[in-house]
Image: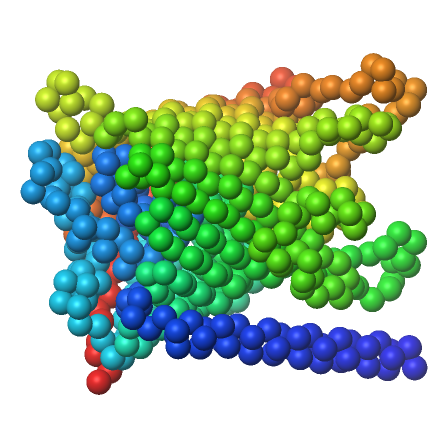
Length: 566
C-alpha cells in the first residue's frame, strides 16, 4: 500500500508539473506572436549565437579595444551573429591604417559571409537552413585540475595524454525576417573534459549544447530554450558565466543604441532535498531551483563609457514552482526578501567600462551578496560578502616601435569567503549549476591576478603568453557554510568578528601558459597551450607541493552551408 501511494503521489506531481510547463510554454509563445504582430519591420534574419569558446569572441574583443564594433553590447553575451555582421557593415574600414586590424575584420567577414550578404542586399531568406558540422581532435594531458577552475574533488582528476574525438553539429532554420530555430549538439569520446555533465554510453557522451527558438528584432528580442549566458567585461564573470554551462531559459531583451534591458528566467538543475530527521531509507525528494536575472546597460559618449546595473536571485524548494514575486523584472529583490522574511539568495552588481582613447580599455565589476548595515545581534557579525574585479586591456602596445598586432591585458579578481554560498538548510540556493559555479569559475574565497600578451605574427598565426596567480582559501561552494561569529564565548557585538581573505590555509597557484593559434581560414584552426603549474599548500594542506605540466591541443574543421528551402 505504501508503494502504491508513493507511485500515485509521484504520478500526480508529474502531471501537475506537465500542466505548469504547458501553461508557461503557451504564455511564452503568445509573447512571441504579439511581438511578431506589432514589430514586424524591425526584424532581421538572426538570433543564432556564437557558442561559448568560439574563436570569434577573441577577435571581437581585440576589435572592440581598438575602438571598432561600438554597436555591440560586450557586457552581456553571447553575441548574435547578425549583430556582429551589422556592426562590421557600420565600420569605415578605409580609415584603418594597420594591416593586423584588417586581418581581424577579414576573419569575421569570412565567418559571417551569409549574414553580411543578407544585410547588404536587404534580401532575407523566406525559409533557409544552415547545416553545420565541426569535428574536433583533442589531446589533453594534466595530472590535476586546471588552475583557473575550482570544482568538486570528484571532478578534479587528471587526464592521460591521448587523442580524443569530439563532434559538434548545428542546425539552424531561418523563417523570413523574424524567427530562427536553432540546435547544436555534441557527441564526444568518454574522457574529453567538459563542464557540461553527461552520462557515458558505449564509450561516448552526448548532450544538447544549445537549443532554442528566437524572435530577433533590432528593438525587441525573445529567446526560449537553451543557450549560454555571460555577463561582465572581464575574462571571467562575477555574475553569470558561460563556464557554468548553457541554461534553459526565457530571455527578453530591449535594444537601442544607448540602452539595453535584459531579462532572464532560467530553470536550473534539481538538488536532492532531505529534511532533518528524515529516515535514511525514505524516498528521495528534490528541490526545484530557479534563477531570475535582470540588467540595465548604457552605452554613452559614442560607447566610450559603458555602465551596467544588475540583480539576480536564486530560489527554490521542494515541489516549488516559479514565484511571481521573483520574476517581476522591476521589483527590488532585497526588499522583497526583507519584507517577506524569506530565505532566498539575491545578488546585485554593477559593471563599468571606459575607453579613454582607442587602444585602451579599463573595466571593473563589483558584486554584493550580503552587507551588514545594522549590527543589532550576534547574527549580524557575519562579514560583508562581496566580489570585485578590475582590468585593463591594451591594443598595439608596441606601436611606438612600428610593430602592430601586439595586445596585452591585466586582470585582478577577488571574492570574499561565503560569497555566492548559502547555509546548509538552504544549500540548494547556492550559486551553482550542476557542479559548476554560476559566476566566477573559482567559486568563492579566492584572489587572482592574470597578465597576458599576444601577438599576430602574420594573418594565420598568433602566439601568446600569460601568467596566472591564484590564492584559494579554505572556503568552498561545495563545503559547509561556516558561522564562527555565532560563538558567543569568543565574539560579541563589542569586539566584532573579522577573518582574513582568503581564509585559512591558502593554496597558492602559479600557472604560465604559452599558446599558439593557427587559422588559415574560418573553417579550420589549431590551438596548442603548454602550461606548467606550481601549487603550494596544495588542497589547503600546509606545506604540500604539487607541480604539473599541462598540455592542451585542439584541431578542428567546420563546414556550415546555408541552403534555401524555397
